[in-house]
Image (cartoon, rainbow, N blue to C red; front, side, top):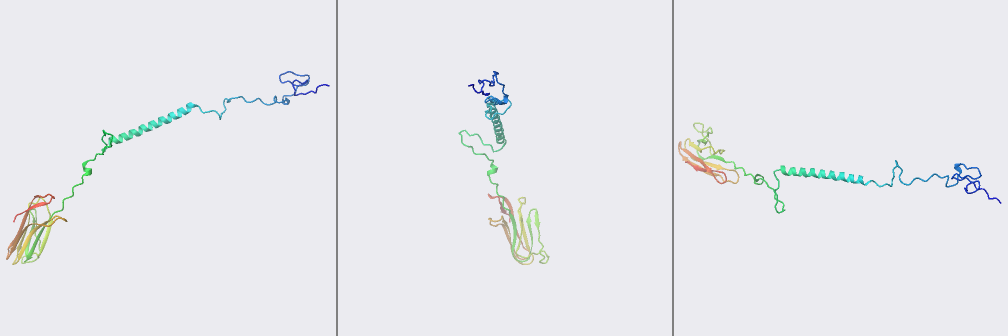
Length: 239
């Protein structure tokens, strides 16, 4: 018996050899070669130039360049902040002195920031008072300011009803303060000069006088004589 012919076997009579050895039979077209000869060649190993390889690790120099740039930026920023802080400390007036033992130094302050302002001196006023009976004409004031009120009473029309009270602000430039009250007709009067300095201070009578009978005059006069420990004027009676 003869052996059956197998066209897929290169060693079979009449088979088609891919290496160019031909048997007695007709050659097979390329599309009918037996496996694995009709399969495409396997892909080459390794990355193909021009194509992205997802399994390839990033290059180390890129990481090094990235962290180098970040470190340089942080260094520049730290230097800028340090310069601003140093400038603000050297330009102010409340800079802390250097400490030799490591303990924080207390801030320095000017005396005007801690010392309270001295209270304003009280307002001093000078009062003129006439009491008693009668209708006197009155003149009062300081060495630079004399006043004569017109009460419209008495024979001359300048008599003032009693009791009489008037006042003015104290001025240290005045050399004295005085009051004169002259009776028109009969009567008995007392005149005085009283100084006040507001709440907390008792009124102080610095000078006084007395008069009675026809046309007699009651006079009182006092002069400033320096100041006391509270800044208030001291007085000397000149009657």
